[in-house]
Image (cartoon, rainbow, N blue to C red; front, side):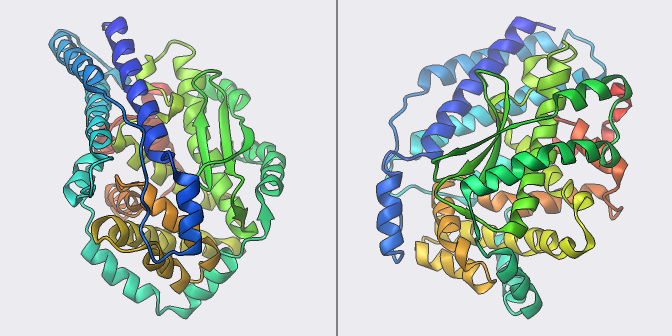
Length: 403
């Protein structure tokens, strides 16, 4: 294995991700546009993006990919390394697709196509079916009533951050009962499993988990422009911490730090192939339920069965059909989420790549892999430890390799 070449590919992919993340998530004029649209939502966003020329980076990526493919034919692999080619190719192909999207951003009008989404995430993006699903749920008064409770914003970002800080240790204590930890790494994982909680100014998320590339510290970020629902805060925190932060801890904090895996298997900066995003977001959704009380289950059910449909509908209406911010807001208002409607509509406008729509289709794909079996402890463990290996390899992956 050519570690130097692997590290170069990882570094190039990470560089593309950092540029893409900065350009896509924070348009140059996002504050002005947000203010304009809040006053008059019967419009579309007119975002302006940083001009970036990535032709040189694209050329080096392709050269590195071809060199890797040439050398990989001569290498026999086992364990995680059996899937190394998949991880490398997914990382490179994702970076190349991101370069393509960046190159299209300032073209008027930007064409946000279904094919782009299908290629980007390897998912079907069947929006016609989503329209039918939405028609059913908007007439379900029970679900709408749950939405009204779940969607009531009560806490400032600072208040929410303080609640999360006090909840970290409790989650760490219980995680071992939910996930089957690899025995020889269990102690290291539990010692490393923590996160800093920060409040930042950003238009593209409500709550987010990252690994800081400079410090390797896992962080949970909250948005200072938002208010938070008490009921939703616990679900969102568990999704970010017991979902994403746990993945980051195991791979970046333990496996890579100990030299068991090369950096390309890591999550630093969440520089990941999009087929990993699919697996990772579903795992983070599924890990929430074991931590909830019986009374809280309807809220997580609402998030997976209603909110994700709303996000897919929002992506479809805004990015594919060309509707306005107000049109998207109506989707959320219809199911009791009026307090969140504007911010969710802004996110739909920002994620031209279909990231908001991805959640629903990703959950459906992983459910197919489960083949009707319940999402038990062993399935969750396998889904976690598969890491950046493409999710379609799940049934061929054995977590016994890290026991």
